[in-house]
Length: 491
Image (tube, rainbow, N blue to C red):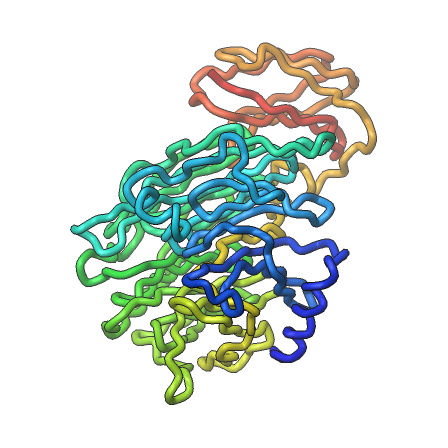
């Protein structure tokens, strides 16, 4: 990446507010360690397909490590967080958005630094509820037992009124997991709308899999898979990263190794595909990211970046990039933007990010552009943790509950399928205003059919007895065309 070209972009953006839309993700950074305003200050970084913009960010918020946020549909800032509070476009704390991650670390760090959890926050959005945002974030504990201790895992809900422009924090610090966990990852469910939230109990092989729907958490399952990553050998930070396809995961510790996993986006089932042991490093790093084609994985180990093919994980990952002699640069956490660039954050107080371009296709060699993205100010370890928002449904699968695959949708017609009572307990009455033979199917939140019936009448009854309480979806199909879908809450 050409540093001079990026500097030109920055200088232009300093004087002109960019009119361009479509920045799917962004991150704010900046940590003012002293009064040197020349090399310190807040920065807004926006990746576009053909360039990356860095400009001054008119905010007094400090970003030590944690950052997440969202844009309005017109490309203007909606809200952001440094893991301590939720801020609006005016850089003021939103009502109800104060005091995220309560506890000793908040009290120690938030007034002066920002929250300390690397990749500790992310935002989930829903295609059927574009006004709704789930801000997932993890707390930290000042643990003397474990060198790095994450948890609890929280869920605030934020809504955007498209008419008034008002941003409202509906809830805050809703506990998803109240135990000590590892870093988390979000993967789009196979229905193209919902999200799988994945994390581990610390030092175990127990994976938590929580299905997030617009109504909130619908399923919480725990599956034990492979290596435990026990403490103390696997101390220091760890990471969990998903491939762009959402079907591969890597759990990594620079002190222990890398666990390669496959993931079924429909059922949520994880399977171990391999494990690579690493020699012990003196320090951490523990960043990981997949290549754009989901075939290779990059790992950071402080002063090294390694690369391995997912389908043939080696017994030992060999260092494939080290900084030039005499440089003190370090590699910590990684972020892949929507266009395939991988950014690697330095450990602390550096005016650059390292970059791996999506064109890096040399086997077993990581073509790292050392200090490849120059910035106007220094940052700490701040790097975002956005999921792959572009990931869609798996067409023609039982999980395609958005009805956007095989059957032809009936356009521009009002809902022709009604159900009552809703919520329902034992029996649901279905009303339809279209005649002829109809096939009715009830799907659970994972997209699996659990009830079905045929009807030629305008009214039918479906038994819900024996089904667990939760969210379901009723679908009506006639002659290959969808004539309606309705959400059902089973009591």
